[in-house]
Image (cartoon, rainbow, N blue to C red; front, top):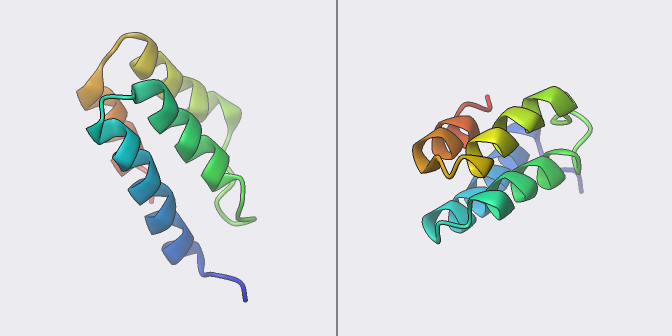
Length: 72
């Protein structure tokens, strides 16, 4: 059974935010990017993933959270 784009996106965000809550910013971004690619309607541009990686590199927790929440 295929999940809807909306439900898949919720799942992606939930998993990424679990890492974010543990202040594991790198894995929050990696999780979001990896999980998005698991649904054909959610794949995103690699440059967008780089933005999340830069927030994580800078240890910008609020930036990573905004990045995750920004996916629609």
